[in-house]
Image (cartoon, rainbow, N blue to C red):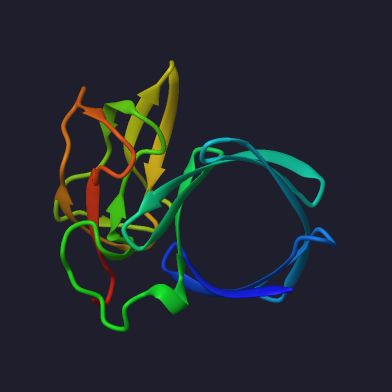
Length: 165
């Protein structure tokens, strides 16, 4: 059993994986989980019998995980600095695309309060649109893109100041 303390979308969860048994405990809930790498940064997950594709992209302090049009910043609590600095791209306040894409809609403005999971930017790649969502509640501190901009994974499109920071 491999145990982690993961920060997912700004909330810490205890996660235990047993790859041999195909099980995962997330926040005290047990799930059947298997995965198969189907390409660079691409996984085919089977979660409780339901198959979904996941895309992974590196982030400054973890990984961006894209599943069914939603974006989650996943960070290992053990690897996070004890005190977060407010520089762009550090911590979970940055939103970045899963693949090279073009910005087709910007759904928020600087200074706007956003809820966790709220759509921020819509990008298009190979005729498929993906809405990048807020990883947690906060305030949009900076928008680093424009309509029709060509963007790449790791490029920070929206920065969010976490609520209470």
